[in-house]
Image: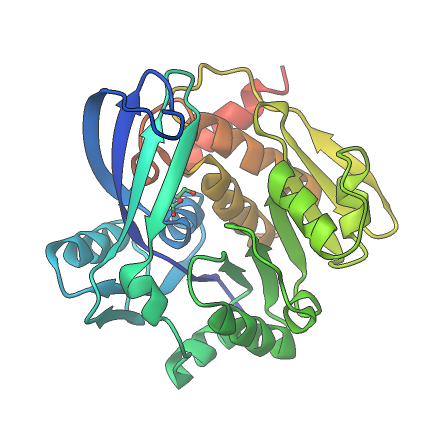
Length: 304
Ligand code: RIB
C-alpha cells in the first residue's frame, strides 16, 4: 500500500479582500478580487503532495476553462488526475470574503462537485491500493460513505475532515480511523450525537464516535485525542495571519502525508500545525500551501 487518495471537491475561489465582513443587509467595498484554485478536496490533495506524499485526486470539474485550470494545477503538483471526471455542470465556485485580520466567510456553489455520485471500479481500486483515504463533505454524502466502506474493508486508513459539517450516519462513523474537525464542527458533531457541547473535553467526548479525533483550534493550535492515550496539544506558531483560507485543508493534507510516511501521530500533528501556520501568512488557498522543505524548517524553528 502506498500514497494518499483524496476524494472530494475542487473549486475556483473568487476571493474579495474587505476591511470587515459585511453584516446581513450591509454593503461594503472590496479592495481586491483574486481568482485562485481551491475547494477542500483540491486543497488537501495539494497539501498532501507538497508535503511529500504520492497523491491521487478523485473528483469532478466542468467542461470549462476553470475545469482546465484545476486539471492543470493538480498535474503541476504531480497529483494523479486520471479519475478526475468532467461533467456537464460548471466547475465548483467559492465566493470568499477575507477581512483585515485574515478571517473569512465562504459560500460554495458545488456545480460539478455534486456529480461525484458513484465510485468507478478504478476509483475503488485506487482507494484499496492507497495507504490513506482523505475526504471532506463538499461532495454528495453517499460517495463519502461508499469510499469509506471500500477503504475500511481493505485496511486503507480513512481520514475525514467533517467540513462543512452535517449529520453523519453511523455507517460512515464506524468506518473512520481519524476525524479532523475545527472547534465549531466538533461542537456541532457533539450536539448531533447527544454529547455535551462545551469546549472543555470536546475532543475526548468525540472518541465515543471515532478512535482518533483531532480538533483544530485556530490560532490556539490543534489537539490529538486517542482512545486509551493522553491528549496531545500542539500550540500554534506565532505568525502574522493575512488569510486563513485553506489553513485547515493544509493541516489535513500535511497530517495525512506525515502519517503515511510513518510519522507517529504526535509528530504528524506538529508537522501539520507547522504547515498550516505557513499557509495563513499569504493569500489564497492553493497558492499558500507550503512545500515540504518550508514545513520542515518551520517545524524545527518551533523547537528552539
Ligand atoms: O477550506 C477552504 C475552501 O473551502 C476554499 O478553498 C473554498 O473553495 C471552500 O471549499
